[in-house]
Image 1: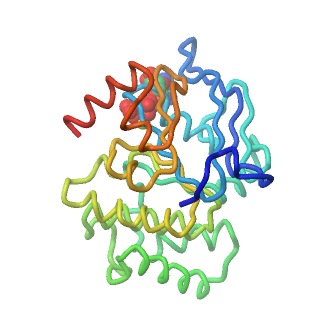
Image 2: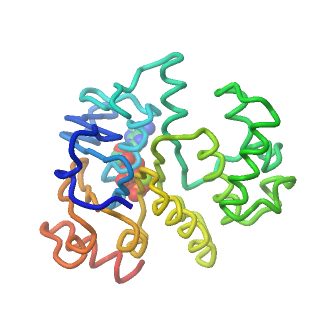
Image 3: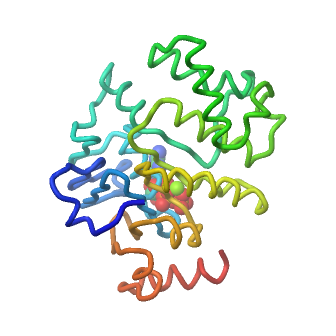
Length: 257
Ligand SMILES: Nc1ncnc2c1ncn2[C@@H]1O[C@H](COP(=O)(O)OP(=O)(O)OP(=O)(O)O)[C@@H](O)[C@H]1O
Ligand SMILES: [Mg+2]
C-alpha cells in the first residue's frame, strides 16, 4: 500500500492514466469524461451500482473494449490498438474476472505456465518453477496437478490470480473477483489480494466488499451512470460520502453486503 495523496507522489508518472475516456455501445453512452490516475503501488477500489460502467472501464484499460475517445496509458505508454504491442500490454495488465476462466482440460500448473511460455517465451522449466512459487504464494501448491473442476471456487480463483501474476504484470485489474464465490471462500481470496497490496502491487479492484476497501484501498472511486461521481480515501468515503448517490449506494451495500 502506498502512502500520501495522489498529489505528493511526485515525478513518477502514474501506472495507469485515463483521460477523457468515452465509450458507448450503439447510442448508449456507458462511460463519459472518465479521468483516473493510479499511482505505482496504489490500490484503487472502484465501487458503484450495477450498470455504472465499472467492468467496461476495466475492459477499456486492457483493451478488451476499444474506447470511442480519450487517452489511456499504462506505465507511461499509450495503450495500443492491436498487434504485438497489444499482446505486450495485455501481459503487463493482469486481469482477474468474476468467472475464473481457467482452461478446464489443463492442470492447475499448466494453466499458470501457459501464458509465460506462449507469450513471454519462457522456457518450460523456468515457467514451472515460477508457477510453483506463485501457486505456493496463493496457497494452492498442493493442487498443482489437479484439474480446475477438482478445486473449490476459492481455490480456482486463487489459481486465476497466480496465472495473472505469472505474466509479471505491472498492474492487476480485478473485476468482482469474489462475487461468484460461496461466502466461506470469499476471505481466502481477499487475503491473497491484501497480501499483493501489501507487497506493493498496483491494483484496480471492482468489488462490493467494502471491508476490503476499508482495509486495503488507498482510494475509493465511486461511479454512477458512466461517470466518476466522487473519489476519496476509504476512511473519508465511508464516513462522509459527499454525493447523494454514494450515500444511497453505501446505505444499500453496508446493510445487505
Ligand atoms: N458488450 C456490450 N454491449 C452492449 N451494452 C453493454 C455491453 N457491455 C456493457 N454494456 C452496458 O454498459 C453499461 C455498463 O455496463 P458494465 O458491465 O460496465 O457495468 P458494471 O458497473 O460493471 O455493472 P455490474 O455491477 O452489474 O457488473 C450497462 O448498461 C451495460 O448493459
Ligand atoms: Mg461489472
